[in-house]
Image (tube, rainbow, N blue to C red; front, side, top):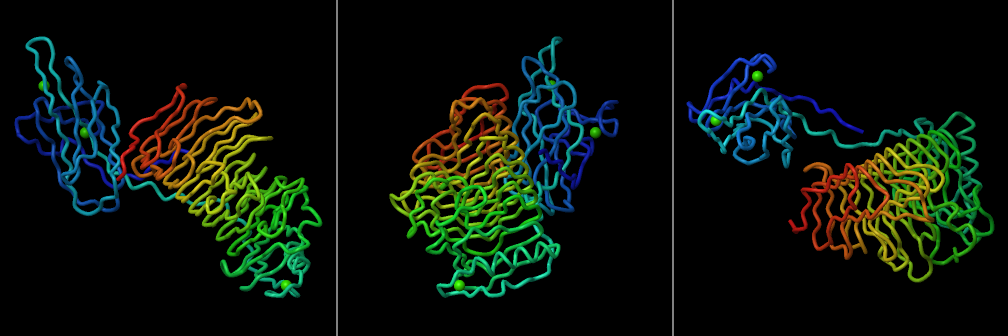
Amino acid sequence: MGRSLTVTAAIEAESMTLSPTDAGGVASAGTASGGKELVLSRNGSAIRSLSLPGQVGSLRISARGDTCEGAPRMTVLLNGAQVLQTSVTSTSWTSYVARLPSPVSGSATIDIRFDNDLYVSTSCDRNLRLDRVEFLAPAPAVECAATGATSTTVRQAVGATPNDASDDFTAIQNAIDAASNAGGGIVKLPAGTFITNGHIIVRSNVKLAGVGPETIIKAGPGFLTRTGPWGGYPVITTSGATNVTIADLTVDQSGDVLDGNRPGRLNEYLVDVRKSRNARVEGVSTRNPFTYSIAVAGSSNFCVRNNNTLSATNDRYDQLDGIHILDSNTGHVLDNIVDQRVGTDGDDGLVAHTMGAPVYDVIYARNKVRGGRHGAGMQLALGNHDIYNIRIENNEFWGSPSGIHSRTWGGGTGVIHDITVGGSSTTGNTFRDNSGNAVSFPSALKNITVTHNVACRSGGFLVASAPGNVVRDNSTTCP
Ligand SMILES: [Ca+2]
Ligand SMILES: [Ca+2]
Ligand SMILES: [Ca+2]
């Protein structure tokens, strides 16, 4: 999950100007880039101006120290603003990274300062040694990898009639089946409300698409008379398909008028990516759920992007999660607006959940989430399989009973590990007006990184101690 960054520009420290000029000098160093280093032997600055040929998001400074009753302190300013202050404790070349609060380009002045010089006659001499400064491009924005269906052949759902009481299930399903049998295609629905009394299955290599939220597929009065392939009540499922897309429409489960409280309610979900590979759900609005709104179950290589969930019913249901990733791996949950708290029935906004398989290699980024009355902004729900390699960044969790929390269910033996919440000054999450803790990971964990997040009118950052955990540089002050 690591990302290497492009070097936009680099300078040797020995090309920098000292101020005052007697603060040190250039020395030969066989281990240094260019064979030379700049030694700051007394308090002072190493300064250089340059023109950056592209955007820079961070600096990487190769430095080492001569310690003397403590290490030298290095303070780095870019264009007059401090971007790093650190002790240089290593006596061999070490990279120190300064992340910029926002990208910089054009003319730039870097100023590296040494301000705690110490010289003890005959015993030791504290100095700061600099080798090289690299200017790194900003991390590329996280985007989905799953392509979904790629055929561009458009097929009409002949016989589907919007805005009347007639059941359009058979016409839509027949068009999907024909498209898949022909090798793939786009089944495109115009604006209007289409009624389904069945459970639409999107087949391999097919994209089911509307023209935007004004294309509505709505559960009709006969919707509960039969079940989907896994015993539940999906409005749309991918049930085993590969290379499949659901896009640009509203999907309404009619949970406000139907009574969805029946066996199997939680077997399949409103929009259900099920045992699929390479699946996309994007530009989808979900309405009136009586189960999870968008779920990815037993699947890999998925993209859930730019969707909008809403839970608005009162005192009819529970467990109404927004976007629920179950027993699935390798995917992205990006740019969604999740609101489970308009009514009282809503539960967690985002979920990673293990029941029969681990959840791993998932990035949740740039989502705006309000968890429901029964839940949290995000829950890591742990059964007997691990949840790991998860990045949670640049999200806003607001107005929820709590921000992000983990729970163990059914005496689960799984472990939550290698989770990053925030992680850098450009990827931190915002927690706003949550009544409980911003982050709470109480048990069954290791290698949890919670850094660079901001909690405003929310609780704190609670992570049980465990090997590899890093919890620092979080703020509980409103910006
Ligand atoms: Ca010195
Ligand atoms: Ca050098
Ligand atoms: Ca119709």
